[in-house]
Image (cartoon, rainbow, N blue to C red; front, side):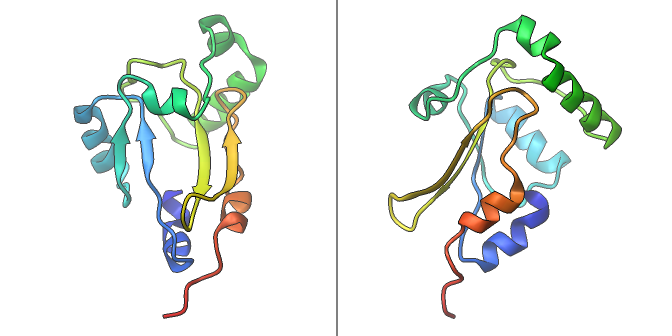
Length: 131
């Protein structure tokens, strides 16, 4: 999302990330990764539960071929896990919401390397608002 943030803002939308770490971790993540949007903390998992985002068991986390391929690709591209949150087995999700309470797009990750295709997220954005 960071790389498409200007395009998202131009469409009249914004990004909010919700992480599994604590506030100290979130602050370091924003600084280290130069995240231009707000990062909130879901330390107790309430937001993940409300959105029906699943966890994976540790065997799946470590040995699922899809996750392993994704981890290798991420490593090749220079991404590293510096510090994990309490719920390292928490899967993620991507939602496009609004205007108002309308959910325009929802992608619930099926495994650790499953992420919403950016083109699908951008396609779900509302048309740019007139300026």
